[in-house]
Length: 179
View 1: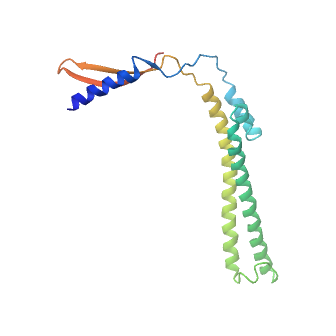
View 2: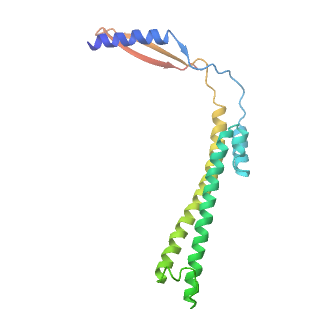
View 3: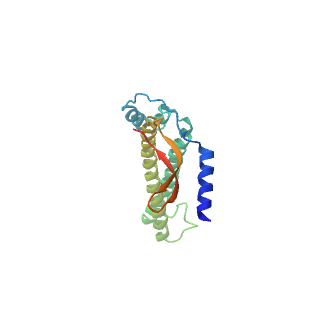
């Protein structure tokens, strides 16, 4: 039963794929090894410029969205950190006029709030730096991939092979690379 299924699979494969099917019709062109370095440099100078250089305009909102969100959260967390820090310093100096006077009664809670916002402020800075470096890396990799040469001899071909000792049929599919 399995032998019949395998034969049917091979017949359908030959019908679907024919003898050979070309996957790509890429024409060879000369590559410039400085293009990825240029794209990375442009992205380092101005985030998103490497993506523009690679003509991947759709990536600009992703780059600026990531940077903008990270900068926004850094700013919010930094302002809240400073509010808690200033309130704590004023209470230690003997003043009772901070904005948390009616909400937070213990100084330890002010320290907890200060540490909370400091932690998220620092994480936001890591996201800013990470987004900046991912922007550079994306521009460089994208420029490399644009230069990737797909040879037109790449083909997909079904085959049937007979094992001569046991006279079993073997069916399969091969991908051929010609160099």
